[in-house]
Image (cartoon, rainbow, N blue to C red; front, side, top):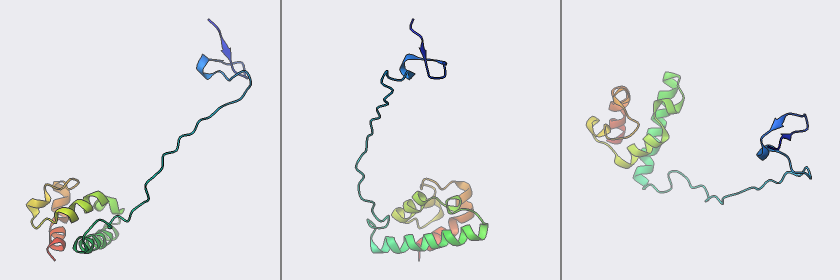
Length: 116
């Protein structure tokens, strides 16, 4: 079995050994990214207005509770609310990210915003 020692004399597995020319070849990979789109771009004007109202409400709630925005509601949950536009508390139950506690705490306000 061949031993591979690094410069400090510490034994290393063969795949950690430096090449004999002390060159380290790195290969990089880059993936082209699609251009970032505006999150509300694919929404209808009515959905954009609801999204704006919900985000204003979430901002006010987070300031009132002294919590980060995502502790009130995640952006993905807001998007689900905008797309489904629940009219009742029971319709809120099918939205991912809204558990019993959040529906109890914020449900009435969310439904009110969706119905305006």
